[in-house]
Length: 308
Image (tube, rainbow, N blue to C red; front, side):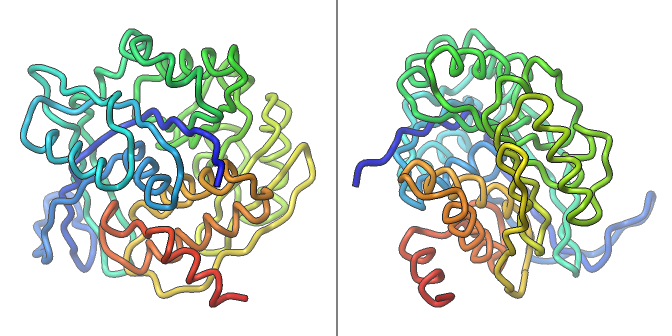
């Protein structure tokens, strides 16, 4: 099957995950269990989701010149991600995330960027041909903002579609928003970008309109277990998610984004692509960890067949 080329530009982290009943209050020590180290980072999670779900994908990123960086690169290759544009940066550690998961499956996270900070516009320039040749570029906000803007500008000049998952939440310059073809915020991120608190579908529609007014054609506001508010050039509707028993929601949004892009680059309709993304995310939340929870194509197809 002929599929479009995807480039993901973003972060790589080693996630240190500890399960606890309740999040500790300041000064409190809580006893946890099931400590593990898993590979994460929004960029890498999305790259893995795209690779495992069948995309033709190259990943532009940085790791530290350390053992974990080398292991991450080897793992990404087995996940069908082209790693030629991932460099080990001297005197840098691979990015790290410290994650607490509570009894409800919610998480709180602290991050040290490490080598992710080395993903500069100059670094991007070395791999610009990747972006020029791609059909779409998918980015998040764990990388330096000036690099995200530079990549969007480069993509725009060469008719490469620009998709931004604006996570973690922050304000963004109108210059960047105007260059996006698609944006995929959750409720918190949508509020940071528009000032509109998203509590229900009406709010989501209003937030989507505000983003359309910034020049973005396609807005997908992810509403957790409820699904996604899909708004194309001002026409919006809810595409409901699949009901599953969640174990943890780490990387659910990333899995959705990566799988969504796989489906779009295979020529699926927006509605079909959102369903495909929902299916991938539904499988991911029933498993612990970030990348270990990301499903393969065969699993997603089987899941969708069971929904017919």
